[in-house]
Image 1 (cartoon, helix red, strand yellow):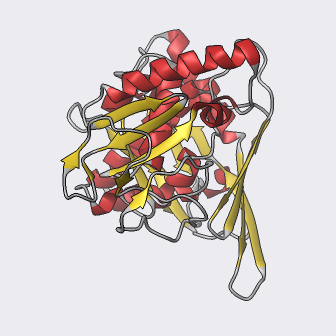
Image 2: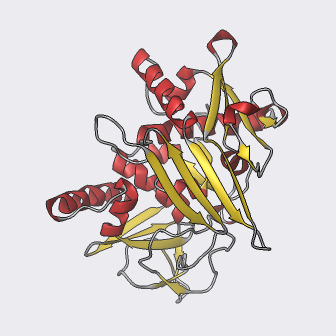
Length: 330
């Protein structure tokens, strides 16, 4: 993996759907997360919930995939004729009949995940790959004539190859993002400079949610549902707020990011914000200001953030398109 360029192209819908969450020690519950994305309904199901460590492992896979696409694009693309294609267990309609193929090792994935390459880390990679290969992604799309197309495939498929190498195929949505179709950029340099799963979880979300040169605000009580998958009350809620504030403050110290608070509302900025007075700033402001920001209410994935001046909204988690590729070099 490159020591200079540590960023991955990620499927925006997966990045905003709360599939990966901080988990308590002990037995994992079942995974069942559903979201609406434009005209598509997406559902992730599996026998085991996916944790933030699994998310780190997925990012290591995507980082390897991005580098192999740059080095030998033809070898890194697998079609339905590939011998490994059945690993993804496609059922019903296949919306895109090709994806990305990666050849790597357990050690490289362990190091790419921010771990060492010792025996416990290798076992952690094996367990994470198993969980993600057992995760099925269901997609249901309504066509313009009112009909529904439905299909599914595994999140990952992998098998051992010669010389302790492993070969992986990624879900077709991940494969599309890796090749520049509706993606979000995740900086792994930033991710691994953050301590704790809460900060890493929020950073991954904001990297998909907040476009460059824009801002987004959300109440901490809504943000907790995305992180943990449920709402806490009383003392547990206060503890969560404290942990979220600490994580948000750490993200706000990253270059190019800003975080400010008004009561229990956090406002996240990314890059330079343009105000209606023509000024540029990424410094904290009051909770409601006129900025060039995402207007998330009723915004489908086929739409872009408006270039008109709009007020920051404290919205629910609803799909917003990441258009960072319009503002930054790949």
